[in-house]
Image 1 (cartoon, rainbow, N blue to C red):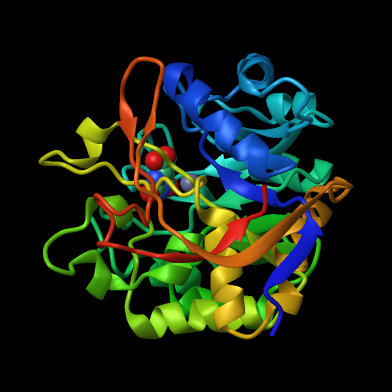
Image 2 (cartoon, protein in one colour):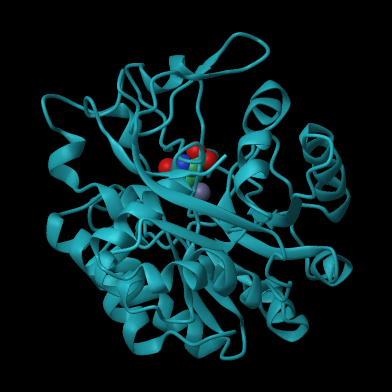
Length: 356
Ligand code: DOR
Ligand code: ZN
């Protein structure tokens, strides 16, 4: 069995880099490990114009270490202010439009209740080939009642997604952070390279809901979509293992200040970027499919977004390590990654390391 692997530098198809001090703290972490990334627009205020995306990109690039060629690929938030004209204006500079169901997660208050309401924008996106990035959960039903959060993804997959794909057959769609057997079943049947793709987080590969409540409530693995049953996690692992060209890594690295994670109302979001590449490698090793790792981490994502996979490489070695410290912003705020020995599940050991 191999204990070292070299792959093209990864592509993160889903990352939250935030703004200000948090952005300055987490951008170098992503830039060291990923050649490029699809940057989520759910900042405050949301990024919903081409001009705002350009400013946001500048702020990110200013935080990239000198000599590092990291490329942030920008997205727009599907707010009610986003117009077909803005979509047209974004062609060439904007790599996707992100839909958040109203109320479902962090900064989703600007989203539509249902993606099906955004008709004119979706038509334009289909026409110009702009990908739609889906937070695929039903949070509020048509009577504006909250659904069971463990069931939101299944409801989206069985009710909303088929109607969306029927209404816009040429729309490019990425189903983000698959967490359930329903999502995996749907993608196994309907996924198509360049057309209907999906991403997987390290969190949904690593954990199930027993760990989310192991010994008490575990804020660091609290995210939307919620981590689900072990059977769901097995199905997510199954599809990763198949090496399908329409499945790729999206870390959904979503840092929150310590005060918002360890509070009476824990913020949704798992900070994964400091360990994501290593955790993906570890799981692919456990599944006996390290030969599929490079496509998953470094090839399938860029192909969907029409960019070249990286020409740089990274090497990983099979060697145990632990993450012990928080990332600290220049304003002194602690950001705790998953798997850490202090607030993780306890003494988690990661079995692969990026070679220095
Ligand atoms: O857990 C999550 N956190 N899910 C999301 O969809 C948003 C993200 C965030 O921005 O913190
Ligand atoms: Zn996200």
